[in-house]
Length: 158
Image 1 (cartoon, rainbow, N blue to C red):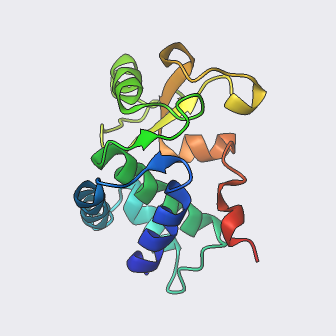
Image 2: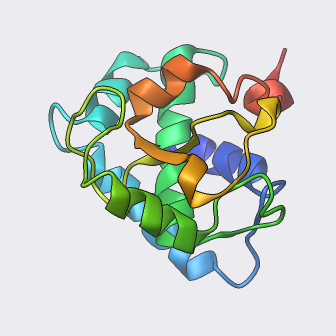
């Protein structure tokens, strides 16, 4: 299941980030996700346990796992966006995390540098700029509630 998800994540990330030359760091991110999902009661563990055995890509729980895995890969490999007007750069992500004092801007739970979502306060789709002042750190659950990446998984639509 994890291998299938890694393949799906890389397929999705390749259209937004430069992956070439970062393979060893991408592998590091995959290993970090694998270890994180083994820690009982954290976000990765809960989402992974909710997926059941099938691991089908078209369920909300699997999509949550894919988003968590992709987030780990982005952070570990310090992936550089192909379009910096759309996706926060690694430096912007560091600044956004620092401004939030390690807490989700929506629900206030503790975040880690290795697992948070750099989110546009005013969505990019509504003209929001990809600048630190328009960024906030969110947990996976709060970012998913906003629903800004609804088209991300269209690649896998059946």
